[in-house]
Amino acid sequence: MDLENFREYCLSKKGVTEELPFGPDTLVYKVMGKMFALTGFEFERISLKNFPEKNQELRAEFDAVLPAYHMNKQHWNMVLTNGRVKDALLREWIDESYEIVVSSLTKKTKEELKNL
Image (cartoon, rainbow, N blue to C red; front, side, top):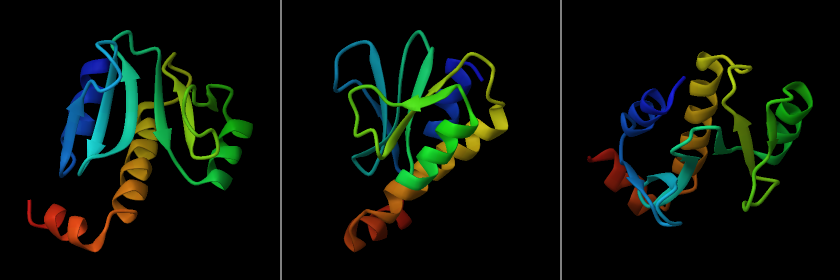
């Protein structure tokens, strides 16, 4: 997966925006204003949200999965985009991150998302 494919995949999801809240070098993907994915323009790594138990499992199984920099390390993993993780698996993890964030939205915000 390259940066353009990553961007297209994230932006294809309902209610997603791409922002630069941390400066010009960090792309942040939000669903209804809540972060679910981050990367840089160099696309060396992606930060994704998941459940703490799953994050521990992924870190143990994949050497390309590490605790995310500058994020809550229980809830966020950094995935190195060096080709050691298949694109299908990256898409699965992006989907999981998106769904976790959607599940945490308020009832009102979930309804707004549904109606987009």
